[in-house]
Length: 549
Image 1 (cartoon, rainbow, N blue to C red):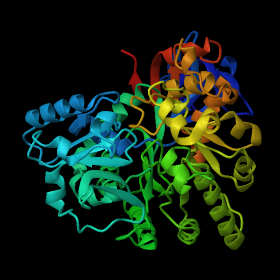
Image 2: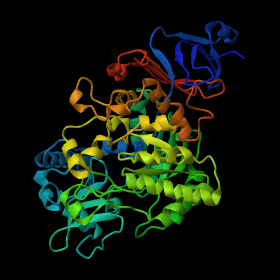
Image 3: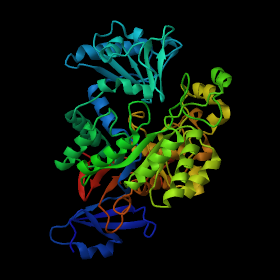
Image 4: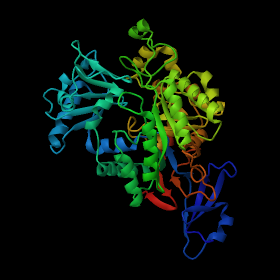
Protein backbone atom coordinates (compact mmCIF):
# COMPACT_ATOMS: atom_id res chain seq x y z
CA UNK A 1 0.00 0.00 0.00
CA UNK A 2 1.24 3.48 -0.91
CA UNK A 3 0.42 6.41 1.33
CA UNK A 4 -1.46 9.56 0.44
CA UNK A 5 0.60 11.49 2.98
CA UNK A 6 3.71 10.89 5.02
CA UNK A 7 4.43 13.21 7.92
CA UNK A 8 7.81 13.45 9.66
CA UNK A 9 8.25 15.04 13.07
CA UNK A 10 8.27 14.63 16.84
CA UNK A 11 5.19 12.41 17.10
CA UNK A 12 3.64 11.79 20.52
CA UNK A 13 1.24 8.98 19.77
CA UNK A 14 -0.55 8.48 23.15
CA UNK A 15 -0.33 4.78 22.30
CA UNK A 16 1.31 2.95 25.21
CA UNK A 17 2.62 0.23 22.91
CA UNK A 18 4.50 2.79 20.81
CA UNK A 19 4.51 6.16 22.61
CA UNK A 20 6.90 7.99 20.27
CA UNK A 21 7.45 7.94 16.51
CA UNK A 22 9.33 9.82 13.83
CA UNK A 23 6.93 9.24 10.96
CA UNK A 24 3.33 8.42 10.14
CA UNK A 25 1.93 7.25 6.82
CA UNK A 26 -1.71 7.94 5.97
CA UNK A 27 -3.89 6.28 3.34
CA UNK A 28 -7.66 6.43 2.85
CA UNK A 29 -8.06 8.58 5.94
CA UNK A 30 -6.31 6.20 8.35
CA UNK A 31 -2.87 5.69 9.83
CA UNK A 32 -1.23 2.80 7.97
CA UNK A 33 2.23 3.18 9.44
CA UNK A 34 3.61 4.66 12.66
CA UNK A 35 7.31 4.30 13.34
CA UNK A 36 10.77 5.41 12.31
CA UNK A 37 11.64 7.23 9.12
CA UNK A 38 13.34 4.27 7.49
CA UNK A 39 10.26 2.10 7.75
CA UNK A 40 8.11 4.71 6.03
CA UNK A 41 10.02 4.44 2.75
CA UNK A 42 7.98 1.44 1.70
CA UNK A 43 4.84 3.60 1.73
CA UNK A 44 6.16 6.30 -0.60
CA UNK A 45 4.57 6.22 -4.05
CA UNK A 46 4.39 8.51 -7.03
CA UNK A 47 1.56 10.60 -5.60
CA UNK A 48 2.59 10.57 -1.94
CA UNK A 49 2.75 14.00 -0.29
CA UNK A 50 5.61 14.28 2.19
CA UNK A 51 5.58 16.87 4.96
CA UNK A 52 8.35 17.47 7.46
CA UNK A 53 8.00 19.42 10.73
CA UNK A 54 11.16 20.40 12.59
CA UNK A 55 10.69 21.05 16.31
CA UNK A 56 7.33 21.25 17.98
CA UNK A 57 5.20 18.17 18.53
CA UNK A 58 2.50 16.21 16.73
CA UNK A 59 -0.39 14.93 18.87
CA UNK A 60 -3.65 13.10 18.23
CA UNK A 61 -6.58 15.43 17.66
CA UNK A 62 -7.65 17.14 20.88
CA UNK A 63 -11.02 16.61 22.57
CA UNK A 64 -13.64 18.44 24.62
CA UNK A 65 -15.50 16.23 27.10
CA UNK A 66 -18.35 18.64 27.85
CA UNK A 67 -18.90 21.69 25.67
CA UNK A 68 -22.29 23.18 24.81
CA UNK A 69 -21.53 23.77 21.14
CA UNK A 70 -25.13 24.35 20.02
CA UNK A 71 -26.11 27.09 22.49
CA UNK A 72 -22.57 28.49 22.50
CA UNK A 73 -22.42 28.95 18.75
CA UNK A 74 -25.87 30.46 18.50
CA UNK A 75 -25.21 32.74 21.47
CA UNK A 76 -22.10 34.03 19.76
CA UNK A 77 -24.01 34.88 16.59
CA UNK A 78 -27.54 35.83 17.67
CA UNK A 79 -27.51 37.13 21.26
CA UNK A 80 -26.16 39.96 23.38
CA UNK A 81 -22.94 39.23 25.26
CA UNK A 82 -22.96 40.48 28.84
CA UNK A 83 -19.72 41.34 30.61
CA UNK A 84 -19.08 38.79 33.35
CA UNK A 85 -17.79 41.51 35.66
CA UNK A 86 -20.20 44.18 34.46
CA UNK A 87 -22.51 46.29 36.58
CA UNK A 88 -26.27 46.46 36.28
CA UNK A 89 -25.87 49.66 34.29
CA UNK A 90 -23.48 47.88 31.90
CA UNK A 91 -25.96 45.05 31.32
CA UNK A 92 -28.91 47.34 30.68
CA UNK A 93 -26.93 49.43 28.23
CA UNK A 94 -25.73 46.33 26.37
CA UNK A 95 -29.25 44.89 26.05
CA UNK A 96 -30.67 48.22 24.89
CA UNK A 97 -27.96 48.69 22.28
CA UNK A 98 -28.35 45.13 20.98
CA UNK A 99 -32.14 45.44 20.73
CA UNK A 100 -31.82 48.67 18.78
CA UNK A 101 -29.30 47.12 16.38
CA UNK A 102 -31.44 44.04 15.76
CA UNK A 103 -35.03 45.12 15.03
CA UNK A 104 -35.52 41.85 13.13
CA UNK A 105 -35.42 39.79 16.34
CA UNK A 106 -38.70 38.91 18.05
CA UNK A 107 -36.98 38.00 21.34
CA UNK A 108 -33.80 39.51 22.75
CA UNK A 109 -31.58 36.83 24.22
CA UNK A 110 -28.26 37.15 26.00
CA UNK A 111 -25.91 35.49 28.46
CA UNK A 112 -23.09 36.13 30.88
CA UNK A 113 -24.36 38.10 33.88
CA UNK A 114 -23.56 37.36 37.51
CA UNK A 115 -26.02 38.58 40.18
CA UNK A 116 -24.46 41.63 41.80
CA UNK A 117 -25.44 43.68 44.87
CA UNK A 118 -26.79 46.51 42.71
CA UNK A 119 -29.50 44.11 41.47
CA UNK A 120 -30.98 43.79 44.94
CA UNK A 121 -31.15 41.00 47.53
CA UNK A 122 -33.40 38.72 45.44
CA UNK A 123 -31.27 38.79 42.32
CA UNK A 124 -32.11 40.51 39.03
CA UNK A 125 -35.75 41.43 38.50
CA UNK A 126 -38.02 42.22 35.57
CA UNK A 127 -38.52 45.74 36.92
CA UNK A 128 -34.83 46.46 36.32
CA UNK A 129 -35.37 45.85 32.59
CA UNK A 130 -38.25 48.33 32.32
CA UNK A 131 -37.69 50.81 29.49
CA UNK A 132 -34.92 48.82 27.81
CA UNK A 133 -37.11 47.33 25.07
CA UNK A 134 -40.74 46.37 24.54
CA UNK A 135 -39.74 42.94 23.25
CA UNK A 136 -39.37 39.88 25.47
CA UNK A 137 -35.89 39.66 27.02
CA UNK A 138 -34.36 36.37 28.24
CA UNK A 139 -30.85 36.57 29.72
CA UNK A 140 -28.92 33.53 30.98
CA UNK A 141 -26.47 33.88 33.85
CA UNK A 142 -22.80 33.01 33.48
CA UNK A 143 -23.35 29.33 34.32
CA UNK A 144 -26.64 29.05 32.40
CA UNK A 145 -28.43 27.98 35.57
CA UNK A 146 -30.90 30.87 35.68
CA UNK A 147 -32.80 33.31 33.48
CA UNK A 148 -33.38 36.99 34.08
CA UNK A 149 -36.40 38.07 32.06
CA UNK A 150 -38.58 41.15 31.61
CA UNK A 151 -42.32 41.57 32.00
CA UNK A 152 -42.88 41.22 28.27
CA UNK A 153 -41.36 37.72 28.37
CA UNK A 154 -43.59 36.64 31.26
CA UNK A 155 -46.64 38.23 29.65
CA UNK A 156 -45.98 36.47 26.35
CA UNK A 157 -46.02 33.10 28.11
CA UNK A 158 -48.76 33.84 30.62
CA UNK A 159 -46.47 33.52 33.64
CA UNK A 160 -48.02 35.23 36.65
CA UNK A 161 -48.94 34.82 40.31
CA UNK A 162 -50.97 31.73 39.50
CA UNK A 163 -48.08 29.91 37.83
CA UNK A 164 -47.32 26.98 40.13
CA UNK A 165 -43.85 26.42 41.56
CA UNK A 166 -41.74 23.65 40.06
CA UNK A 167 -40.20 20.77 41.95
CA UNK A 168 -36.72 21.08 40.43
CA UNK A 169 -36.19 24.81 40.37
CA UNK A 170 -37.00 28.18 41.89
CA UNK A 171 -39.39 30.85 40.68
CA UNK A 172 -38.25 33.86 42.68
CA UNK A 173 -41.32 35.83 43.78
CA UNK A 174 -42.00 39.22 45.33
CA UNK A 175 -43.82 39.77 48.60
CA UNK A 176 -47.21 39.41 46.86
CA UNK A 177 -46.28 36.11 45.24
CA UNK A 178 -45.72 37.47 41.74
CA UNK A 179 -42.75 36.05 39.79
CA UNK A 180 -40.12 38.78 39.91
CA UNK A 181 -38.32 37.86 36.68
CA UNK A 182 -35.63 35.55 38.08
CA UNK A 183 -36.05 31.85 37.21
CA UNK A 184 -33.54 29.29 38.47
CA UNK A 185 -32.69 25.72 37.47
CA UNK A 186 -35.82 23.77 36.44
CA UNK A 187 -37.92 26.93 36.46
CA UNK A 188 -35.98 27.99 33.36
CA UNK A 189 -38.08 25.49 31.39
CA UNK A 190 -41.00 27.90 31.64
CA UNK A 191 -39.06 30.29 29.38
CA UNK A 192 -37.74 27.73 26.87
CA UNK A 193 -40.44 28.53 24.26
CA UNK A 194 -38.77 31.94 23.82
CA UNK A 195 -35.24 30.58 23.48
CA UNK A 196 -35.48 28.19 20.52
CA UNK A 197 -33.27 28.69 17.49
CA UNK A 198 -34.05 27.38 14.02
CA UNK A 199 -32.21 24.51 12.36
CA UNK A 200 -30.50 27.01 10.05
CA UNK A 201 -29.37 29.14 12.98
CA UNK A 202 -27.95 26.08 14.71
CA UNK A 203 -26.12 25.11 11.54
CA UNK A 204 -24.52 28.56 11.49
CA UNK A 205 -23.67 28.21 15.18
CA UNK A 206 -22.01 24.81 14.79
CA UNK A 207 -19.98 25.99 11.79
CA UNK A 208 -18.92 29.09 13.73
CA UNK A 209 -17.65 26.94 16.60
CA UNK A 210 -16.06 24.42 14.28
CA UNK A 211 -14.04 27.01 12.39
CA UNK A 212 -12.73 28.56 15.59
CA UNK A 213 -11.87 25.35 17.43
CA UNK A 214 -10.40 23.37 14.55
CA UNK A 215 -7.86 26.19 14.44
CA UNK A 216 -6.98 25.25 18.05
CA UNK A 217 -6.56 21.55 17.39
CA UNK A 218 -9.94 20.31 18.58
CA UNK A 219 -11.36 17.41 16.58
CA UNK A 220 -13.74 15.65 19.03
CA UNK A 221 -16.48 17.11 21.24
CA UNK A 222 -19.44 16.07 23.38
CA UNK A 223 -22.33 18.51 23.28
CA UNK A 224 -23.92 17.56 26.62
CA UNK A 225 -27.43 18.98 26.04
CA UNK A 226 -28.33 18.70 22.38
CA UNK A 227 -31.95 19.56 23.27
CA UNK A 228 -30.98 22.72 25.15
CA UNK A 229 -34.05 24.64 23.96
CA UNK A 230 -36.42 21.69 24.24
CA UNK A 231 -36.38 20.98 20.49
CA UNK A 232 -34.57 18.60 18.16
CA UNK A 233 -33.31 21.50 16.05
CA UNK A 234 -29.68 21.30 17.14
CA UNK A 235 -29.50 17.56 16.47
CA UNK A 236 -31.17 18.05 13.09
CA UNK A 237 -28.67 20.79 12.28
CA UNK A 238 -25.72 18.49 13.01
CA UNK A 239 -27.31 15.73 10.97
CA UNK A 240 -27.78 18.01 7.97
CA UNK A 241 -24.22 19.31 8.21
CA UNK A 242 -23.01 15.72 8.40
CA UNK A 243 -25.00 14.71 5.31
CA UNK A 244 -23.76 17.79 3.48
CA UNK A 245 -20.14 16.92 4.29
CA UNK A 246 -19.67 20.14 6.24
CA UNK A 247 -19.22 18.63 9.69
CA UNK A 248 -15.46 18.24 10.05
CA UNK A 249 -15.37 17.55 13.79
CA UNK A 250 -16.55 14.37 15.47
CA UNK A 251 -19.61 15.58 17.39
CA UNK A 252 -21.22 13.34 19.98
CA UNK A 253 -24.29 14.52 21.82
CA UNK A 254 -26.23 13.91 25.02
CA UNK A 255 -30.01 14.22 25.24
CA UNK A 256 -31.14 15.65 28.57
CA UNK A 257 -34.12 14.10 30.35
CA UNK A 258 -36.09 15.43 33.30
CA UNK A 259 -38.38 14.28 36.10
CA UNK A 260 -40.26 17.50 36.91
CA UNK A 261 -43.78 18.52 36.05
CA UNK A 262 -44.62 18.27 32.36
CA UNK A 263 -41.97 15.61 31.70
CA UNK A 264 -42.17 11.86 31.13
CA UNK A 265 -38.63 10.72 31.86
CA UNK A 266 -38.83 7.30 30.25
CA UNK A 267 -40.63 8.65 27.17
CA UNK A 268 -37.84 11.20 26.74
CA UNK A 269 -35.23 8.44 26.76
CA UNK A 270 -37.22 6.59 24.10
CA UNK A 271 -37.37 9.77 22.04
CA UNK A 272 -33.60 10.13 22.34
CA UNK A 273 -33.22 6.60 20.95
CA UNK A 274 -35.44 7.47 17.99
CA UNK A 275 -33.50 10.70 17.44
CA UNK A 276 -30.22 8.76 17.48
CA UNK A 277 -31.45 6.45 14.72
CA UNK A 278 -32.79 9.35 12.66
CA UNK A 279 -29.68 11.53 12.85
CA UNK A 280 -26.67 9.21 13.24
CA UNK A 281 -23.96 9.64 10.63
CA UNK A 282 -20.19 9.36 10.19
CA UNK A 283 -19.46 12.52 12.21
CA UNK A 284 -22.52 12.88 14.49
CA UNK A 285 -24.27 10.66 17.00
CA UNK A 286 -26.62 11.09 19.96
CA UNK A 287 -24.75 8.69 22.25
CA UNK A 288 -25.49 9.83 25.80
CA UNK A 289 -28.40 10.52 28.10
CA UNK A 290 -27.79 13.63 30.20
CA UNK A 291 -28.92 14.08 33.80
CA UNK A 292 -28.53 17.38 35.61
CA UNK A 293 -28.79 16.01 39.11
CA UNK A 294 -28.06 19.21 41.02
CA UNK A 295 -27.40 22.89 40.37
CA UNK A 296 -24.46 25.09 41.26
CA UNK A 297 -23.00 27.66 43.63
CA UNK A 298 -22.59 30.38 44.78
CA UNK A 299 -26.21 31.50 44.96
CA UNK A 300 -28.98 32.74 47.18
CA UNK A 301 -29.67 29.95 47.89
CA UNK A 302 -27.14 27.73 46.18
CA UNK A 303 -28.49 24.66 44.38
CA UNK A 304 -25.58 22.18 44.15
CA UNK A 305 -26.41 19.22 46.40
CA UNK A 306 -24.01 18.76 49.31
CA UNK A 307 -23.44 16.12 51.95
CA UNK A 308 -23.24 18.85 54.58
CA UNK A 309 -25.19 22.13 54.76
CA UNK A 310 -23.94 25.32 53.17
CA UNK A 311 -22.19 27.72 55.53
CA UNK A 312 -24.10 30.96 54.87
CA UNK A 313 -26.43 32.01 57.74
CA UNK A 314 -29.72 31.10 56.03
CA UNK A 315 -28.48 27.65 55.03
CA UNK A 316 -27.13 26.97 58.50
CA UNK A 317 -30.45 27.98 60.04
CA UNK A 318 -32.40 25.69 57.72
CA UNK A 319 -29.71 22.98 57.44
CA UNK A 320 -29.98 23.49 53.70
CA UNK A 321 -27.83 21.26 51.48
CA UNK A 322 -29.02 22.22 48.01
CA UNK A 323 -31.48 20.83 45.50
CA UNK A 324 -31.89 17.56 43.62
CA UNK A 325 -33.65 17.42 40.27
CA UNK A 326 -34.35 13.67 40.32
CA UNK A 327 -35.14 11.22 43.11
CA UNK A 328 -33.23 7.98 43.59
CA UNK A 329 -35.91 5.77 42.06
CA UNK A 330 -36.07 7.83 38.87
CA UNK A 331 -32.30 8.25 38.65
CA UNK A 332 -31.79 4.48 38.89
CA UNK A 333 -34.49 3.89 36.28
CA UNK A 334 -32.73 6.33 33.94
CA UNK A 335 -29.48 4.41 34.21
CA UNK A 336 -31.20 1.07 33.68
CA UNK A 337 -33.26 2.07 30.63
CA UNK A 338 -30.41 4.07 29.09
CA UNK A 339 -28.10 1.08 29.36
CA UNK A 340 -30.73 -1.18 27.84
CA UNK A 341 -30.89 1.13 24.83
CA UNK A 342 -27.11 1.38 24.49
CA UNK A 343 -26.69 4.87 25.91
CA UNK A 344 -23.96 6.10 28.22
CA UNK A 345 -25.28 8.31 31.03
CA UNK A 346 -23.60 11.69 31.55
CA UNK A 347 -24.36 13.26 34.95
CA UNK A 348 -23.95 16.87 36.08
CA UNK A 349 -22.87 16.72 39.74
CA UNK A 350 -21.27 19.78 41.28
CA UNK A 351 -21.89 18.88 44.92
CA UNK A 352 -20.46 15.88 46.77
CA UNK A 353 -23.98 14.79 47.71
CA UNK A 354 -24.96 14.58 44.05
CA UNK A 355 -21.85 12.55 43.22
CA UNK A 356 -22.53 10.07 46.03
CA UNK A 357 -26.15 9.69 44.94
CA UNK A 358 -25.04 9.05 41.35
CA UNK A 359 -22.67 6.31 42.46
CA UNK A 360 -25.42 4.77 44.60
CA UNK A 361 -27.71 4.70 41.56
CA UNK A 362 -25.06 3.09 39.38
CA UNK A 363 -24.40 0.44 42.03
CA UNK A 364 -28.13 -0.36 42.22
CA UNK A 365 -28.37 -0.53 38.44
CA UNK A 366 -25.38 -2.83 38.01
CA UNK A 367 -26.66 -5.08 40.79
CA UNK A 368 -29.70 -5.72 38.56
CA UNK A 369 -28.12 -5.73 35.11
CA UNK A 370 -24.62 -6.99 35.79
CA UNK A 371 -21.35 -5.28 34.79
CA UNK A 372 -20.88 -3.90 31.31
CA UNK A 373 -18.66 -1.37 29.58
CA UNK A 374 -21.10 1.55 29.84
CA UNK A 375 -18.52 4.26 30.66
CA UNK A 376 -21.01 6.43 32.53
CA UNK A 377 -19.51 9.79 33.37
CA UNK A 378 -19.84 12.47 36.01
CA UNK A 379 -18.94 16.02 35.09
CA UNK A 380 -17.91 19.18 36.97
CA UNK A 381 -17.04 17.43 40.26
CA UNK A 382 -16.50 20.70 42.06
CA UNK A 383 -16.87 19.45 45.65
CA UNK A 384 -15.83 15.82 46.01
CA UNK A 385 -15.67 13.59 49.08
CA UNK A 386 -12.35 11.78 48.63
CA UNK A 387 -14.01 8.60 49.96
CA UNK A 388 -16.11 8.43 46.79
CA UNK A 389 -13.16 8.43 44.37
CA UNK A 390 -12.32 4.71 44.84
CA UNK A 391 -16.01 3.99 44.24
CA UNK A 392 -15.76 5.78 40.90
CA UNK A 393 -12.77 3.65 39.95
CA UNK A 394 -14.49 0.43 40.98
CA UNK A 395 -17.64 1.28 39.01
CA UNK A 396 -15.73 2.42 35.93
CA UNK A 397 -17.14 5.95 36.11
CA UNK A 398 -15.30 8.53 34.01
CA UNK A 399 -14.34 11.80 35.74
CA UNK A 400 -15.06 14.64 33.30
CA UNK A 401 -13.12 17.42 34.96
CA UNK A 402 -13.09 21.16 34.18
CA UNK A 403 -9.45 22.34 34.19
CA UNK A 404 -10.51 25.71 32.80
CA UNK A 405 -12.05 26.35 36.25
CA UNK A 406 -8.92 25.43 38.22
CA UNK A 407 -7.54 28.87 39.05
CA UNK A 408 -8.78 30.93 41.97
CA UNK A 409 -10.79 33.93 40.78
CA UNK A 410 -10.51 36.90 43.18
CA UNK A 411 -13.92 38.21 42.12
CA UNK A 412 -15.72 34.95 42.99
CA UNK A 413 -13.62 33.23 45.65
CA UNK A 414 -15.06 35.25 48.57
CA UNK A 415 -18.60 34.34 47.48
CA UNK A 416 -17.66 30.66 47.26
CA UNK A 417 -16.03 30.69 50.70
CA UNK A 418 -19.11 32.36 52.15
CA UNK A 419 -21.28 29.59 50.66
CA UNK A 420 -19.28 26.45 51.40
CA UNK A 421 -16.61 27.44 53.93
CA UNK A 422 -12.83 27.57 53.77
CA UNK A 423 -12.11 23.83 53.81
CA UNK A 424 -14.46 22.81 51.02
CA UNK A 425 -13.45 25.85 48.99
CA UNK A 426 -9.74 25.03 49.32
CA UNK A 427 -10.25 21.43 48.21
CA UNK A 428 -12.48 22.09 45.20
CA UNK A 429 -11.96 20.61 41.76
CA UNK A 430 -9.64 17.67 42.29
CA UNK A 431 -7.87 16.06 39.35
CA UNK A 432 -4.69 14.32 40.48
CA UNK A 433 -6.68 12.35 43.04
CA UNK A 434 -8.69 10.78 40.24
CA UNK A 435 -5.56 9.80 38.31
CA UNK A 436 -3.89 8.43 41.45
CA UNK A 437 -6.90 6.23 42.22
CA UNK A 438 -7.20 4.76 38.74
CA UNK A 439 -10.21 6.71 37.52
CA UNK A 440 -10.27 7.51 33.80
CA UNK A 441 -10.00 11.31 33.64
CA UNK A 442 -11.03 13.58 30.77
CA UNK A 443 -10.84 17.32 30.22
CA UNK A 444 -13.75 19.66 29.57
CA UNK A 445 -14.58 23.35 29.72
CA UNK A 446 -18.40 23.70 29.93
CA UNK A 447 -18.22 26.10 26.97
CA UNK A 448 -19.71 28.74 26.67
CA UNK A 449 -19.58 29.10 30.46
CA UNK A 450 -15.86 29.37 29.72
CA UNK A 451 -15.40 31.23 26.47
CA UNK A 452 -13.02 30.95 24.76
CA UNK A 453 -12.19 27.42 25.93
CA UNK A 454 -9.25 26.31 23.84
CA UNK A 455 -7.80 22.86 24.62
CA UNK A 456 -4.24 24.07 25.21
CA UNK A 457 -5.46 26.57 27.80
CA UNK A 458 -7.23 23.77 29.66
CA UNK A 459 -4.10 21.63 29.48
CA UNK A 460 -2.01 24.41 30.97
CA UNK A 461 -4.56 25.05 33.73
CA UNK A 462 -4.45 21.36 34.68
CA UNK A 463 -0.67 21.57 35.06
CA UNK A 464 -0.26 24.89 36.89
CA UNK A 465 -3.76 25.57 38.38
CA UNK A 466 -3.29 29.33 38.24
CA UNK A 467 -3.21 32.18 35.77
CA UNK A 468 0.25 32.74 34.23
CA UNK A 469 2.44 34.87 36.46
CA UNK A 470 -0.33 35.41 39.03
CA UNK A 471 0.49 33.37 42.13
CA UNK A 472 -2.52 34.81 43.95
CA UNK A 473 -4.76 32.78 41.62
CA UNK A 474 -3.14 29.44 42.55
CA UNK A 475 -5.79 26.96 43.65
CA UNK A 476 -5.38 23.56 45.33
CA UNK A 477 -1.80 22.96 44.11
CA UNK A 478 -1.74 19.41 45.44
CA UNK A 479 -4.10 18.49 42.60
CA UNK A 480 -1.72 19.61 39.84
CA UNK A 481 -1.07 16.97 37.18
CA UNK A 482 1.65 16.51 34.58
CA UNK A 483 1.45 17.65 30.98
CA UNK A 484 1.59 13.99 29.96
CA UNK A 485 -1.53 13.33 32.03
CA UNK A 486 -3.26 16.34 30.49
CA UNK A 487 -2.44 15.10 26.99
CA UNK A 488 -3.91 11.72 27.91
CA UNK A 489 -7.02 13.36 29.37
CA UNK A 490 -7.50 15.46 26.24
CA UNK A 491 -6.94 12.72 23.65
CA UNK A 492 -7.28 8.98 24.27
CA UNK A 493 -9.36 9.40 27.41
CA UNK A 494 -11.82 11.68 25.59
CA UNK A 495 -12.23 8.96 22.98
CA UNK A 496 -12.61 6.36 25.74
CA UNK A 497 -15.35 8.45 27.38
CA UNK A 498 -17.25 8.56 24.09
CA UNK A 499 -16.72 4.86 23.27
CA UNK A 500 -14.74 5.66 20.13
CA UNK A 501 -11.22 4.85 21.34
CA UNK A 502 -11.17 1.92 18.92
CA UNK A 503 -10.88 4.44 16.07
CA UNK A 504 -9.89 7.80 17.61
CA UNK A 505 -7.74 9.26 20.39
CA UNK A 506 -4.25 8.03 19.53
CA UNK A 507 -1.88 7.86 16.57
CA UNK A 508 -2.15 4.14 16.00
CA UNK A 509 -2.17 2.03 12.85
CA UNK A 510 -5.75 1.42 11.78
CA UNK A 511 -7.22 4.44 13.52
CA UNK A 512 -8.60 7.47 11.73
CA UNK A 513 -5.90 9.99 10.91
CA UNK A 514 -6.80 12.84 13.27
CA UNK A 515 -3.86 14.89 14.48
CA UNK A 516 -2.68 18.36 15.41
CA UNK A 517 0.72 19.87 14.65
CA UNK A 518 2.02 22.28 17.31
CA UNK A 519 4.94 24.62 16.79
CA UNK A 520 6.15 24.13 20.37
CA UNK A 521 6.88 20.87 22.15
CA UNK A 522 4.50 21.27 25.08
CA UNK A 523 6.11 18.33 26.90
CA UNK A 524 9.38 20.26 27.11
CA UNK A 525 8.43 23.95 27.34
CA UNK A 526 7.76 25.98 30.47
CA UNK A 527 4.33 25.00 31.86
CA UNK A 528 3.28 28.66 31.76
CA UNK A 529 3.70 28.67 27.98
CA UNK A 530 1.78 25.52 27.04
CA UNK A 531 -1.18 27.61 25.90
CA UNK A 532 1.09 29.71 23.69
CA UNK A 533 2.05 26.82 21.40
CA UNK A 534 1.02 27.77 17.85
CA UNK A 535 -1.20 25.36 15.93
CA UNK A 536 0.35 24.79 12.51
CA UNK A 537 -2.32 22.41 11.30
CA UNK A 538 -5.26 20.21 12.27
CA UNK A 539 -6.09 17.02 10.38
CA UNK A 540 -9.31 14.98 10.51
CA UNK A 541 -9.62 11.72 8.63
CA UNK A 542 -6.40 12.32 6.74
CA UNK A 543 -7.45 15.73 5.42
CA UNK A 544 -6.23 19.11 6.61
CA UNK A 545 -9.19 20.98 8.08
CA UNK A 546 -7.02 23.84 9.31
CA UNK A 547 -3.59 25.07 8.31
CA UNK A 548 -1.82 28.13 9.66
CA UNK A 549 -1.80 30.89 7.09
